[in-house]
Length: 174
Image 1: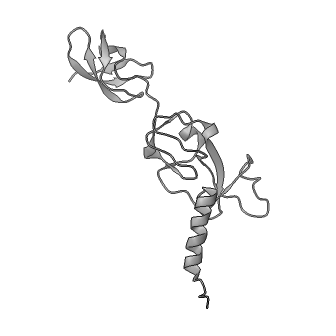
Image 2 (image 1 turned 30 degrees about the vertical axis):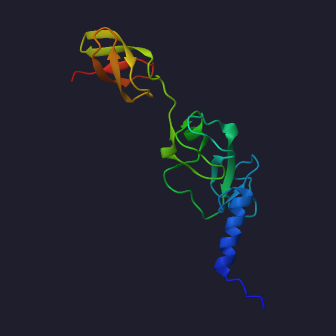
């Protein structure tokens, strides 16, 4: 004698099968390189987002070829603190493993390092009309705007400074 399947058990089973077979979030559908307004003419278009199409490993640069465009089902919205647009993801570095079919948390990506650890850099101290420059070695990597530590090559003194867009370090009086 067969027992009828409850609705919630059926939904759970369908969700598990959809995640295992398709690898997409249960509330998204693949879009085929169409604009958001062309996706379905007879139903309202959902939000178009990008998710990984393959595993992206820590330290790997995120490229658009590794991402898949999906359209959220109308009425569904992406969770907060998730990167889903090309300008948020292109050229960023994965901090942790990013799985296919899953949103990418903004905390799981970072800017590419502008200066690497152990690199020789120019350090500048600017106060009014006075500019002092020196050569230093970075003690940690950093992106533009990051505060990092450097060791002065001549004196051996450790300084903290801000990474500038041109790869130099600007220190301030402490």
